Amino acid sequence: MRLDDLVRLRRARDTMDRDYAQPLDVPALAAVALMSPGHFARSFRAAYGETPYSYLMTRRIERAKALLRRGDLSVTEVCFAVGCTSLGSFSSRFTELVGETPSAYRARPHEAGAAIPPCVAKILTRPVRNAQPPPPPGGEPVRIGEAESPSVS
Image (cartoon, rainbow, N blue to C red; front, top):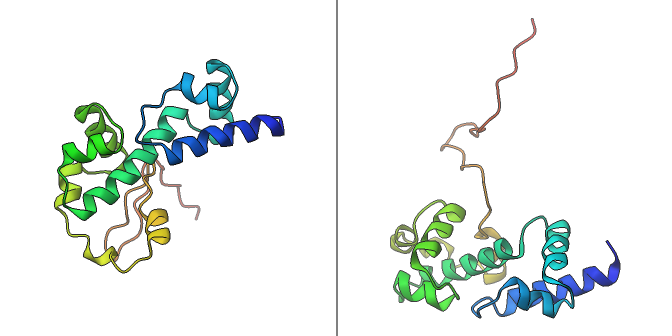
């Protein structure tokens, strides 16, 4: 990929990071990147490993987690505050990325993370698609989809 294309893609990605709560779609982001919508979508996926929509929703879910941890807004208010227009789609994507519903996440205590600096908390709480579940307490990590290798004696 050409360096000037990467610069323009970064400009669009920065727009998503900054203006995540605004109504953004591929044609608008492609205009920021000075590309056609099709070329932008293909190039973005090639450069960042995910679609522009997926990247934008991850940013929105990150922000939603922060707002839900505060506890002063309802799930519906958070949904609209981060730029989502459908509570059902927001809840589905949140559950997919975080592993629990927005209501369950909001209801859970979050005081343990209060002393963590925001820059570190952002890294630690970033939603990760298809993440491995945490290991059981005191046990070995559970590996999903791996077959046990036969022992050679």
